[in-house]
Amino acid sequence: MCYTVSGDEMKKYEITTEEYTAVVKARRATQNKRIARRLQVIELRYEGKTSKEIAEKLDMNWMYISEIVKQFKAQGLEEFARMKYTSHNRKLSYEQEEEILQKCEQKAEEGHITTVEEVRKALNAEIGGTTAVSYVYRVLKRHGWVKKMPRPKHPKSADEKEQADSKKIKSRYDKLVEKASPKRVRILFQDEAGFGRISKPTACWCRKGIRPIVPCHHIREYRYVYGAVEPETGDSCFWVMTRCDTESMNFFLEKLSEQYADDYTLLICDGAAWHKSTELIVPENIELFFIPPYTPEMNPIEQIWKEIRKRGFQNEIFNSLEAVIDRLCFTIKNLPATVIKSITGRKWILSIF
Image (cartoon, rainbow, N blue to C red; front, side, top):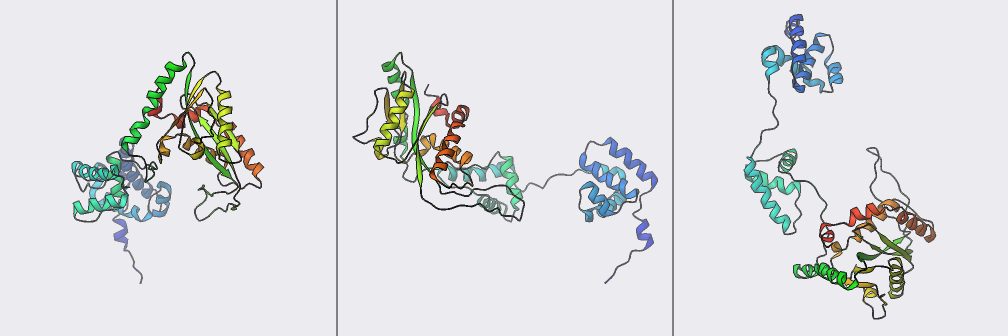
């Protein structure tokens, strides 16, 4: 089926020279960018540009161009240039939105993960209709909500009393300061992590429609890094070992003691078997303090392992354990103290000093 437009219909939407002159003047006078762009549509139409040419130049939908011209001819310049364009109508008041989000926040404090879809359902129930996902995002932004990665916590994590007991670190530190005077007392956090030839693919940037291919294998050969970091200064001590046991821990403690021979070290660590072994030899200038079980979030060196993996082991394949060790040593050597301090310097730790 074919439709035709009469000459009279075409003339009805022609832009006259007088209109063009007034439009140019109005566009130069307005500070509203959206109105200025609509006025520019009228200018370009007067200059003989087609809808598609105008749309391409102004980055607009070409089907919208004719509608703008019709509005201009129907309303006149004064009304056309005075139009106010508001965002989507708010379906609920600010107070109603806040009340809904407070309920979601209460669930989050109890360990529930809040999703956009759940907020949307709550808004729909209050409105008595359906809302677009974009409306939900506007509500969240309006009330200062942001998307964050939850902090991991083991389901068997220590209760509040046990975690409160772990704050005895400060009390222990204060006593050591008196005991060790005039020596300096350092607080270091210790842990071990395994690095091997098994490579784990991670996300990377690429063009849409293309999925990168990363070589990987599953050869289970590992080396273990014993590490200790000082959040106050960013100082660190790392040693690569062949296994995790009491003998390796004794070696690490000996080297740590030598590194800070003139100081006294309060070493915070978890309750691994080799940390509490009866055969463990703790040097005189080191004292161990154990965090409660299932509380890795209290040991900031956990984030250092993630940083090392990010810097040296993402989407990588290693032909030998020697290559793994070389990469480990290179990555750790080039990990600045400022980065370690930034990652591990949590408020509750720094408040001890």
